[in-house]
Length: 211
Image (tube, rainbow, N blue to C red; front, side, top):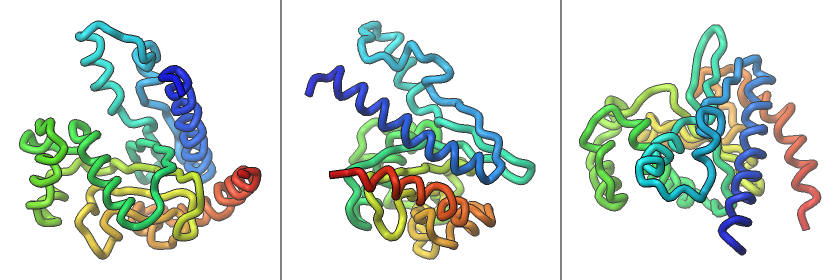
């Protein structure tokens, strides 16, 4: 597959996942505002960009969350992902490390983590912190909305809440959208019912056509 083909496929998959997220929160009567690089500066999403200064700007903008979601009670910055390589619990935990590293400049308030450029060093440093220390360093109200290409643990959609990264009680930051526990974690009483009523039936229908 050529680089061009791969880029367009990723863009289509990402757009699909974003529409799932948008529809989910819109059904829950959230205002959904697009805030990602595609909206702020679409020219920077193009892969052919050889100017170093522009490349640096592009790298920063690519970590801008896809959506700002809000209602009268709460607001979230949401980054949406479509994943085909998660098959078990450990894959989720490994993906946590990847997300925290990739979005460190947005997530972490402290320089000691946000300025580490080597992933292995970053993860090693992260592992030394206790849960409370992680919570103090992380920006609140930032979540990842992850759409899988299959149903896993009763759900196609899984939420990663970084501030719960080291909390066993809160699933180390992960909860599936089908679980009632997600309602408490996000403080959205009907989040899981929105998933079960609207998102799951639609994805069941779409994925039924897979060979």
